[in-house]
Amino acid sequence: MTGVLRNCTVVVPTIGRPSLDVLLDALADAAGPRPAEVVLVDDRPTGEPLRPERPGLPPVRVVRTGGGGPAVARNLGWRTARTEWIAFLDDDVVPDPDWYARLAEDLAALPADAAGTQGRVRVPLPADRRPTDWERGTAGLATSSWITADLAYRRSALAAVGGFDERFPRAFREDSDLALRVMDTGSALTRGERWITHPVRPADRWVSARVQAGNADDVLMRRLHGPTWRERADAAVGRRPRHLAVTGAALAAFGLAAAGRPRA
Image (cartoon, rainbow, N blue to C red; front, side, top):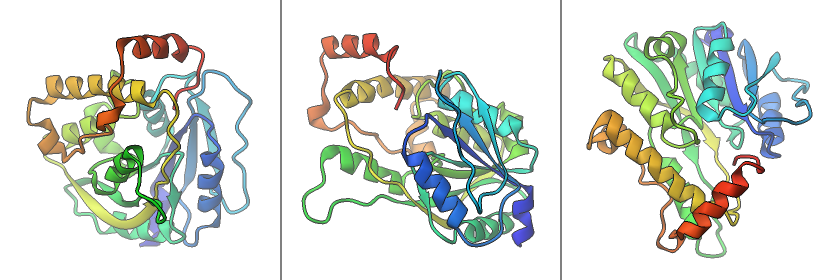
């Protein structure tokens, strides 16, 4: 069973956030068999080279996109890999200490017609106060399906549909789109038994504009997959709380500032 990880690559797209160090530390410290390698996709336009090496990590390769966005980064990652299995992790998650062993079990248990398996996600919320709308929105990841926070695919399944659609410029809906196209080929996706923790990132002043920009991805999903896409993908509504309504002026300001700001 553990031998399956020798034919698995972990792909992590990153924009160099501090959370990347937490993820890499968790992968280095986790017990169990190691995958063949970790492909770290640096999606920053510029920046100092990443320093991912740690005792206990599998071999790490770093490749760069020049800032193409999450879909571009994930495509470069899986196309760089040489293994049958590609396990995608986001750079702001924390795998459980037994993540490698549980991933091996999830992959080994898949039927031949299954194209991939999603891990389980926990989102910690504050215990001493009511969560904010932003925190509750993030908590929706715990019940969302086919999100690449932790999702492993057969490489052949990715190749058959051309990978991620790079018309999705943000880390939003590109994973649901991929899942629908994979399932449209007749392949199944399953939910595994491995776990990650997805902390809530602090909201910044641009969160409203990012939420509104994400609505364009929902429009693209409807155009590509029809009006029932959300039910088919079992997709959450997303972070659109009432008080996040934004004016056109704020959106314009966001657009002007985005060119000079790293993407979140």
